[in-house]
Image (tube, rainbow, N blue to C red; front, side, top):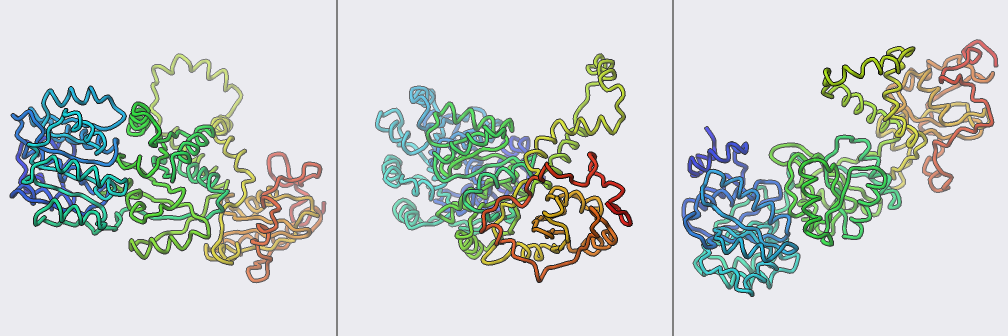
Amino acid sequence: MNKFAELGLSSRIVEGIEVLGFTEPTPIQAQVIPAVLNEPTDLIALAQTGTGKTAAFGLPLVEMIDVTARIPLALILAPTRELCVQIENDLRNFSKTTKGFQTVAVYGGASIRTQIEQIRRGVQVVVATPGRLIDLITRKALNLSDVQVVVLDEADEMLNMGFMEDIDTILAETPEDKQTWLFSATMPTEIRQIIKKYMSNPVEISSGGGNKTNENIEHQYYMVEARNKYPALKRILDFHPDIYGIIFCRTKAETQDMAERLIKDGYNADSLHGDLTQMQRDKVMNAFREKTLQVLIATDVAARGIDVDNLTHVLHLHLPDDMAYYTHRAGRTARAGKTGVSCVLVTSKDLYRIKQLERTLKIDFKKMMVPDGMAICEKQLLNLLHRVNEVKVDSAAIARFMPVMEREFAGMDRDEIMMRFASLEFNRFLDYYRFAEDLNVYERRETRDQAARKGNMDLLFINLGKMDHIGPKDLLVMICQVGKLKAHQIGDIRLKGAYSFIEVPANASQTIIQAFNGFIYRGRRVRLEIRNDKEESFSEKRRSHKGSSREMPRKEHGSGFKKDGGFKKEHRKGKKG
């Protein structure tokens, strides 16, 4: 049995929402719906974004409204245009089995004449932003004297945006005996003023408390230098090829700039901010909802109306000044019982704010390392292979091209065809990230080797360096081939004159040392040992600003490798160069 029926909703409403997949009410819905259906009452509901607030007030309105009336009986106030549109769309979906239920969304940036015409045709529910609503009242195009229910959605945000005076003006146009339903994530002083002035013995409902975040969200942070935030962001996007998320910026200018840079670099991204026309905003949001747009860059205000399911990530280029904003941002993901990730890019001076959020919101942040180039390349290759494996093949349509393909691939074996095919997409990532530097910043005076040990890495000393005409790339290939490791398992490589340091997994260090026992390179016996307590700090390298630790090998010297990456026989043990 559909559990919404137990809340007092009619079979007509329940049948309609079952088509939408509504069978199990969220906590806020389970508390609000019966409270307002049982008897007329004022209501205060504390609930975070993504908890199902729209259905909590929308379903009772569809149930209660007299569809024979052609005048506004309910008013819903929202802070942004996007949220207005989203609420009205939801009401339309909830009322598909309720003949005669009419709504209109009124907001700035759209034709006011069209909105007036819709109102004149007869509507029972008006969803509005405060500014446009006052404009309609001033023009005497909208009469609120018969309104029975006023819903203040995202009330705290409306107050943050300076709408207190507008709310006073609007509520003064409504009857005194109306019901007022107030939904807010927090309870600032201004909200209490509204409650005292306009509400009588309201029912108070809380779903998870004022600042509590969704438990299905994993909170992460990456610590980088301010100048490296953009390249770090690109690495995060590249490491998650299937990402579907929102990147939050502080200002409209920063949002536009970030979108332009990402688009220029080939990412499927676009921006949403207050300087866009309504047509532009609608175009961007439609593309994002339809997933033809993978990443949306937005300001906090513009994102208030974004109610999109299945977001995998929310990324914060900067932490918001108000902690409540973090909760709102993070709440865009992990909706309807799904899981999601909230990632913050911070500098070392902002680390204390992560600790503040942990204490205030009672959440745990997981420190993440900005992925290195080889890890990204491997992830992209696996994603390509997955896409090939999942692609639908129209055999009949492809059949006519088979003779051409057979001639084109003549003389190539299966392995070569696969390698060439994969290289079409893979090479650009490999070329870009081959010598990518480490972008991570380490806490306090923690050196790179100390951080490596925390991450179960050992630092190996190897008696090969620049004097042996060897580069980081050569050492990387050597460790992989001789030590039987994959490139992404190896951390930083730092060359000195006669020796080098290499980070390797702690559980593989002894095996690697054994594998190199007796190994000869250019007539020199190679020796490795663990040097976790004696090495020079990698942090000194960053302070010296000498560039990437994965510098290009010098081309004027022979590397001691075959062209295919294998070692010459004379460099194996027992042979002299």
